[in-house]
Length: 480
Image (tube, rainbow, N blue to C red; front, side, top):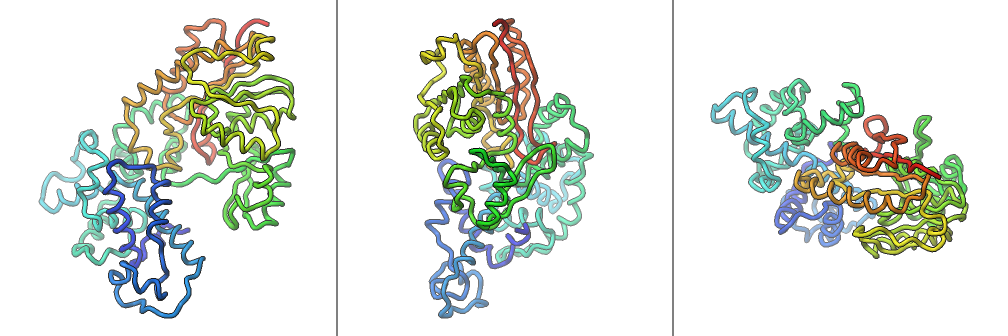
């Protein structure tokens, strides 16, 4: 879907209504969950239908769409839902930029400090996501629209739209030029105060200048919907089957060996999905599971399994031999894993809760060999590596949260390491690009545990792969 399609004039009434409802929340929810519920409560009826004649949006659109005896077409409704959802995700990406543009615009109007002299790092230190509420909805949406398409139409209720559009055309180069790191980050929906962390990541991962620029700019685009073949099917076989059932797919260039869905019929409606022959799993997440180089018959513990994406990926290489013990703090997440394991016909996955407060009490068959062959700690984290899919999460990120999470991450590593047998492996992973949650944690652990050595550690995904950005480290315990 073209980004500019979000900004057709007749959509503004619905976007403005939606935005007011969003701002009226006591506490902002994850935007995808909120959108699903909002669209359920506020159904859309295409212009010209009898239902639209009673819609609160028709009057705001004007008389261009007189009511007729026209039936609601499901494709039109689906298209509208997609457009409104995409617009809301764009609003989340450029939440701070809209405030910055309004600040700069008002400064110019009142003849204040020239744009090039504004201390945007200091401005950012005082800005809060709730400040978006201070912008009139028409102003907010027009700034977002101009960021995506300089020729986008303006809301009818914005009297100085022409002046704003002319001003924006004049300053666009100032914000988008990467020579000024602070405004460049603002332009891409990222806070200037995060620049030291971004630069540290570039240094730690040895990213080239183009790779770093790609990492920043791609934060505003969804990654592909990556798929994993399961149950013995090859990716080529899976692609052919999905194509027959109306799902469009694309293969990643070698050597990634990835497959993603690009459109067409919904994946959940297909036979391969219903029979457990395909799972939705990000490419970086798949590679974390592959770092657990399990062999059939071995014993694996996935400590923070959640709904079980990595547990399933690990089990798929074990031919139902050995065991995968999947634990999580929340039992309801493990219920989802059990449902998915049953669908895929995996009989070697066992689940129970574990709160990370004490070492795991080993199951009998694991105790016999004095520990697991593989222990995966896919730790709770800031999830900064998933901002492409969840742009609203970047505004919930706070340094104090990071401190709490790093303490929890290290606690989980400390408790989990007791369950690794001599000669076994401990795999640590996050879906974060922050060094404090990744390399720093591994270095601290190795310093305090001489019986473990580092096999490898690396960042996965963006900017070298079109996926989320994740981290994995493989540690080996000495002795046999």
